[in-house]
Length: 247
Image 1 (tube, rainbow, N blue to C red):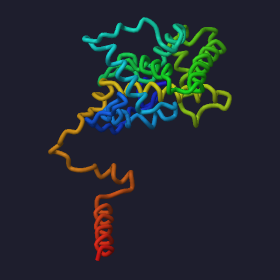
Image 2: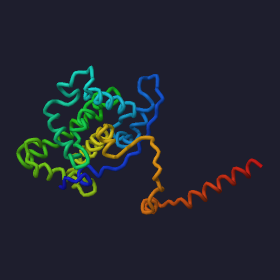
Image 3: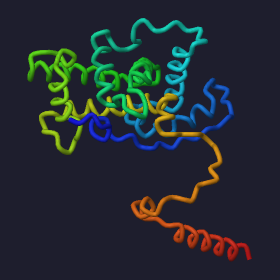
């Protein structure tokens, strides 16, 4: 298994994020909610809401802040200490450190996932699936190498991950591991891209004018099967129809 993020963990894709400034009386700003719409497709598979994502990210941001009034967490909220060691190790296989940015643990993605699993909005089924998946990982490692996933060598861990990271290539008997890793990968990605480090990794600059923007590149338009010409023609037809309807 390569350490490249296009393999285990998937390639870091550009997630659309949009800032807002309006505040919601419930305690979560609209800006915070919009901040997490980019990771919502990933988090939806885990039953996580945008407001829940906002709470988790704000908690992690507050803990890391040098002016924070919150004490650093001494223990995870959901995971056991044994599970926590596995979670942190596995998270950095999903998103390792590279020349662009730090790893999942550098971005506190495990803390984010831990907070979400302890959150009131997370379903019990999601908690059971995560805990059961971590147990499966240890059982599979013991079956193959007579040691836990944490106790295995890097090559041994990668061997297991290679077998469960690509659902279409995985053997049927590894379906439980595939389902777990897919959920875990989505959870870590949600945490990473909700962090300041994740924003910088995507080169997200917010609602800032770009005078050098020349439109979407032609290869990207071709891949999507769209064109500016078709859009302009469709828009013109819409305007004609609206004008005719009003006459």
